[in-house]
Each structure stands twice: as structure tokens, then as C-alpha cells.
Length: 154
Figure 1 (tube, rainbow, N blue to C red):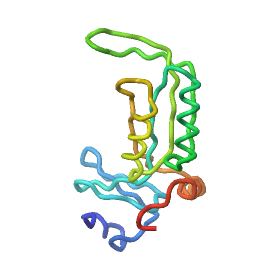
Figure 2 (cartoon, helix red, strand yellow):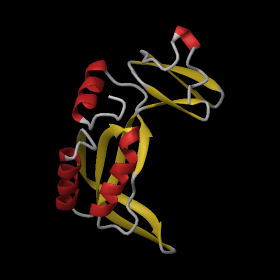
Figure 3 (cartoon, rainbow, N blue to C red):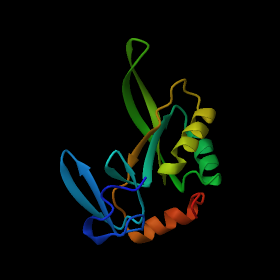
């Protein structure tokens, strides 16, 4: 589907741009360095994402991180210990010390990344949350693209 905003700012439809336009609460925001995008429901979305999940044990986090990077579903995983989480589980307020993993990936890899994390995770319902990377340095984006699985259109 061609994005309805593809011709804004002189961009040719379907071609990469150095300008990223997104609508949020009726405002248009322009971001630089984003080379490709997807359009969903009239909102231009970047193809790069940051994914977060948590683990009970550092060893599990490290093992999962290594497997995801080896599979090229994520280019890097930052493992941060000593997060204190408070949450509702089965009708009760619980708390736990957890390890947070933050991963850099691409939107098209998210379903496979979710499946892989879920298959290796010890939690019954693991947190797997993706947020859009709205901007990054050109060098970092190029490195990220080289380290991930190729896109189907490459």
C-alpha cells in the first residue's frame, strides 16, 4: 500500500527519504536520518524498533540475548541487572528483581523476535514490547541494517 503522505516534501512515492514524517495528536513531526518507512493507517512508521523484555535470572537473559544476536533477529542486546518491578499477577500485587534486556531490531522482524523470545523465556507471560526508533545517527542505522537479517525486498 502506498503511503498517503509519500509526496510530502517532494519525496517520490515508494523511495527512501532522509525525512521521516509522523502524525501524533494531529501534529506532524519530521525526523531526519530515517531511510525507509512503512505506512499504517495513514501514519508513517519507521522500520527500526527497540524491544524490551525482562528476565528473572541474568544467565537466562544472557543466553537468550546471545541466541537472538546469533540469529540476527536483533543487532544488539543491552542487559541491565537490578530492575525492581511492581506488577499485578493473578489478582495480586507482586514485586520482583528482574533483569531488563533492550534490543535493537526492525519492525518486519518483530513477529519472529517475539516467537523466539517466547519459546526461550521462562515466564508464562513475558513482557515483549516494541517501541519505534524515531531517529538515530546515520552510521548507527547503517550498522544496524548490516547486522540484522536482510529484508525480503533486499
